[in-house]
Amino acid sequence: MTSASTSLLITGARQADGTSGDLFVADGRFADPADAPAGVHRVDADGLLALPGLVDLHTHLRQPGREDAETVATGTAAAARGGFTCVHAMANLTPATDTAEAAEYVQALGEREGHCEVRVVGAVTKGLGGSELSELGLMAKSAASVRVFSDDGRCVADSLVMRRALTYVKPFGGVIAQHSQDPRLAGTDACCHESEWSGRLGLPGWPSQAESVIVARDVQLAELAGSRLHVCHVSTAESVEVIRWAKRRGVQVTAEVTPHHLLLDTPLVAGYDTTFKVNPPLRTSEHLDAVREALADGTIDIVATDHAPHARQDKDHPFDVALPGMLGLEQALAVVVDVMVNTGRIDWPTLVRRMSSTPARIGQVPGQGGRLAIGEPANLVLVDPSARAVVDADASASRGRNNPYHGRELPDPVVATVFRGRISYQRG
Ligand code: DOR
Image (cartoon, rainbow, N blue to C red; front, side, top):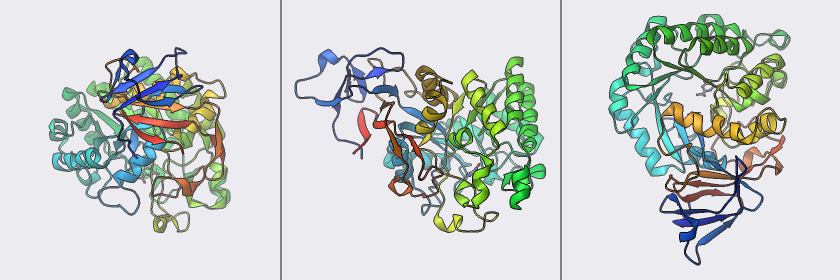
């Protein structure tokens, strides 16, 4: 999908701050439009917004190990369609990314097959087992230059292991990204938000406090270690309150919310459609209100997709047995535009911070999330702010069909994506 053209002149686009002017891209970087040669490949972007390429801090690419669910090529093609120029590949692969060699392997796959930059997330503990730290320092020093570590899918539940991980990554500025889910309180078979809905549907539920007790513990451990914590997929009002409190104390904590926790609520599971099974579970409206407000006021720093493709045979089961997870990359921007921008909760410059510059800063990714300025790497997305369309799961570039937005009318903002100066996706 990446075009062969090495120079492009994008005309007529506005930027998030309201400024406009032609953008000339040559040899992977923004250059002076006055230097564009006659006959250069032109992209007419009249009426469109040009934003820095989006950066996802939380993506499941499934390769190596579950190429029937997703590959680096298909997952990053979905990313490009969604306007992303960088994703972070979570460590719950087979084998888990818990050594320098495994990290370098995933990074090399990304360089070879990716339609966007693939940064590697290292496992916090060996085999995601929760008891023994992985090669955190060696992964950081490796060619993959790992900065974010997570056992996502599982919580680092042992407080001492979590303290050691935070302490260990501090000297090289690493960040521990926690899947906050107390395994005892949530239980092993819970698959629904504990509420009248779990009772009525007969689905084992987990309470919002199973998330917030871990967040409360971890912000205190981050303060104790003087180290950086990132809270994955915040889904509850209680977690938001704890993060707000920790930020006021000066704790180095950042947090993300997924598109699905911004838009989708618990009653959707009433049809037992396993597409809506996800961890943490879809919550009720008061929690949605809290995470929306927190994203607007900056308590939640970023949107991250938790794009979690699954093979059909892993979803075609009774609700309590199916694997949790849903797609996110292709509709992430659409959901944020719908829930946050079109409702006046945030403006476009804030959206750029939440989906591009701040995730790039947390992940310490050079060359992403920057300004569209001469000399900078040319990573950008062209956005039509008013287009709308009905989502079709079968039109996805992902291998997964577990798209929770299928059949829903949403904004359809992504017109084209440019990664390292080449078109990685263009509508039509
Ligand atoms: O629903 C989820 N699916 N939540 C996670 O944290 C992991 C993910 C997966 O890997 O499928």
